[in-house]
Image (tube, rainbow, N blue to C red; front, side, top):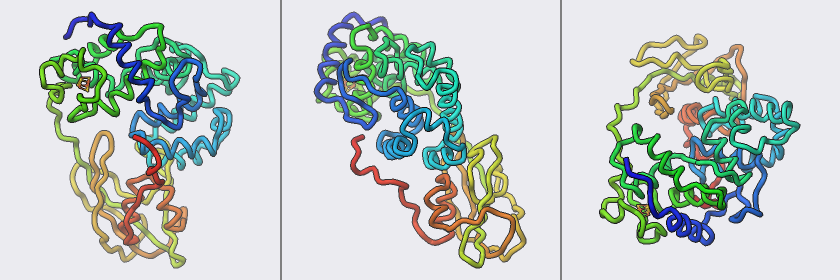
Length: 357
Ligand code: SF4
């Protein structure tokens, strides 16, 4: 592992100067400077959303949540099903459940006011080390060490770390900690995030516009894209199943609510078979003249799913919903399956054209 950097003040000054000019404008930001701190609810909400998706994808969801539930108290009072439906498309629904649990704890136990320390934030339900550090730094200007994948990549390149990920993670976090001081910690955290997202990008970094070239070991060695080193990953496991698009004589589609526990827990979706490691013949939810519509694939965090989609007309005890409504509200995997069944392409839920990445 690389030794502790000796030119910390110069690295910090170069990056903070760059951030003052090139920091991103984002919907949850108030801008550079300790006097421009923003609402903890906004930062917390954005950080939870950003843990699993990109800024362009998360931003429309963020704005929609904020319009619908403008305060943590409003979110805490929202029905679970409405929040889960609004989260659909962001994936990883356990985060939505944790989001609600946290909002309710802040409202019930803290009078609607977020704790202002990293330790206090970490004690909230569903708030992990990264989110606690990010909110503490960005909102309360605490000298917290905020390390995500972007920051790990910058550290690995800046110090030419030869240990591959994931084993390198603790060392990269220690290196990042050496650069955190009491001076502008919130801006520092955001400056590193911005550098990782826009300049020291995955793949080929834009070293010719980077403020840290004078200090960067990977740049000096002319091999920045070599870092971070990665241990070869096993292929993502694959599962198979069948999704059933059943339409009634009014053209509505049959939906079922999934069990609270497990993947997509508590969400509405098309009826499906179990998702198995090998393709298997499945039993439809009702007897009908089922026809094959094709297959869709969807990649979850821990596996890739191939679903055969079958369609039929019939009746039964389901949540009957207009297909247009279902295509707007369902989790992405079911939107793909229903889109195939109705013969239409599944388009992005909301436009992100106006947002900067
Ligand atoms: Fe990343 Fe290049 Fe900047 Fe080094 S010089 S931190 S590799 S963008």
